[in-house]
Length: 244
Figure: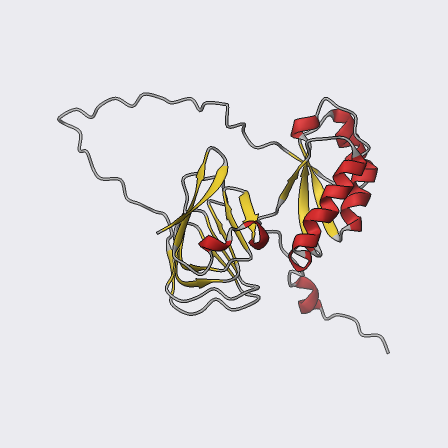
């Protein structure tokens, strides 16, 4: 016997849209040679198959936007290594049309680092004006319990964890990340593009570390930096790990 929803149930919202920040790995494409791309993708995924399996990825075509690319074959190559493309960024109008045919959305490019923001000069306050201190509204987060496998923590400012981060857990911050225990999961700092952000941890055993989208997986981290206190920062787009 089929049931008919009551009038009160029909009036309740069944869903809602909310804005959110989601970190997604970006696959920067530097060649249109599908054979080379496919080969190197397979080799990369072999290094950490469980990390890449069913992971979403955004395809960045900015570096080849003036070149012809068989986007359909590229998407097939990505699917073949069990990675899920969610869309493209950059590229030509032809690339965007192909992406639309493949039911992949096209995302806008982030502002180029070469572009300089316009800086407006602010006049010095006069004697009559009150030079009040600027309040810091950044929401820093303190976690005193272990971050366990499957858990995900997001901080709009700095993130401080006085315990450990388990394998399979993910900690994300718009600012710096401080971990006073072992880091065995994933840590992503400066996720909105802050290249001055840093990661500090007392025991590095991470599955992945990332600052402003520049990342390394466990297999790319030298053994000399593992299980010791380190700090991680960016230097000219290179991810630097330093013993402390």
